[in-house]
Amino acid sequence: MKQYNNYADLITFTRASSATYLDSDGLLKTASTNIPRIEYDSDGNRLGLLVEESRTNLIEYSDFSATWTSSNCTLTSSQQSPDGNTNAILFERNSTAASYLAKSKSKAASSLTYSLSVFVKKDTAQYFAVRLQGLYPSRADVVFDLNSGSIATAAATISNFSNPSAYIENIGNGWYRCILTATSDTNTAINSYFSFNSNNVAIDGTDTAPDSSGIIFGAQLEAGSFPTSYIPTSGATATRSADVASIGVSEFGYNQDEGTVVVEAQYNGVGQAPRLLCFSDGTNTNRIVIDYKPKLTIITDNVITVNNIGPSSESSQLIPYKSGISFSDAGSAVTIDGVSPAVSSGAIPKSITKLIIGDGQTSPRYLNGHIKSIKYYPRRLTDAQLQELTS
Image (cartoon, rainbow, N blue to C red; front, side):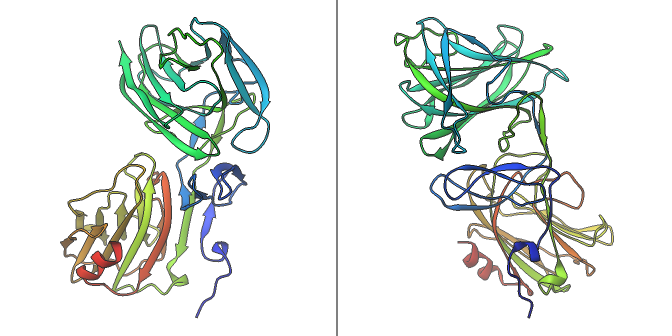
């Protein structure tokens, strides 16, 4: 019987850069190159292994130390940030007129979808406003309520911006991460705005409490329809490399004739056809592919024998779920959270050599989320057992 003292003995993992994550003590930490990130929520509950695609923070000074424009506000450095250091900024309005921090960036292409995110903490201001703007008046706006940790004024677009969405994430210790996503216009620049206020107003709104204030840290602008983990910058744009994780099937007694996996997971946003797991022989010819919904596709000798089957219920963004997948030549089944499984039959490949975690053999197919646990059974469990194990 094989014994493993830690994950490094079992999982092959690479990432060609450092990356940030929320640790069990509630602090934002940095994992070194090729070190996996086991992330936790604001209550200290383990979310699991974080697997993300590569992304670039387009803002050169995420710490607001240079190149940001400020209007009608006073900025004071050396405030405690989510990483426990004194590298955040206190933002204080000094006028009832529009007050904000702003940053303009040249765009690589027009009509792209961008995600703007930042960490904020309430001081005296209840509300925090965020804007993405192209050629005025084209823009997207949202206002967050820092008392309740909710959206006060829903994300909306004007003129040639579209597809607005927003959410606020509690990361603990009074800190929230606020996110706004929208598709830009064709202007050559994209502008990011942040502001604290007491009146639930947008960036250019007036505030009857000119001394309203809040703490701000870690600005990030990404090309993408959802945000990824924080990428710090200080003078230049920075790129976080993708997480790549796999296990050789010889490490856990894989049965080539039949099997079952039960996975606990959660995803932060949908990229290019995200994969939850992929059993593979190292080629596209023989694969057992499980996507994030979950859906099952089996390719045997380059022929699709089971085609994208899945239960009637599907996973939702940011919501943890359990999926169960069984497979054999006699039949395969897929369930989520104890619902009735979807079933199909077709031959499975008999030359599997590795299990790819949070990605597919054909990349990029990154999960952009967390995998809390993977349980493998070297036999095909019954549909009733699948339902019971995922309930």
